[in-house]
Image 1 (cartoon, rainbow, N blue to C red):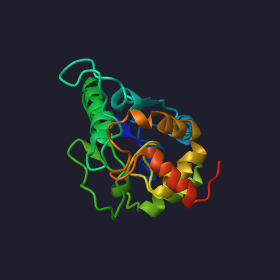
Image 2: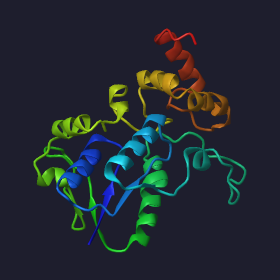
Image 3: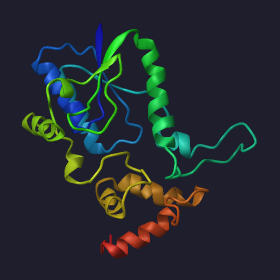
Length: 223
């Protein structure tokens, strides 16, 4: 049975790969969904590929711009765009990650999926076709983090953000957006340049431009 590692660039899935290598478990494929990645994640991807001696296959699906800002070509709303995703829904996860991943996995045949669920996490246990090497080896989230640090594979975003996610995620805190402005200036500027096109505000009560003006004043960022 083939083993496929579901890698998110996070500490738990990275530690899963480290444990698999240490125990001689052959990883046939590594699959990852990054519809709107940070530059640091792409650098980490190359390091992880080198460590695992296995290419990371990125899920084939729409990018953030392709889905939310491309004009619709058919239907009653032809010519319009969705705009920034609403924070009350999980559209990003479903459209940009889960559905493209499910579609891509259909061509992989039978396999066991390796997922990063650590001991003590309040998440659903592995299903019949999935397994967690962290649970099997009593690895907590803290231990998983230590393993990543030891191998030089800890996602650097952990040093910057309280939680990781896509660059242009509207669920980010104001402080996270301020940091995003510094490390991803091109994508930050893209949000400012395209803000006027979106029929949906970036936050429920503010456009991206309004939020930009607020956080620049709040964090005294005059650039």
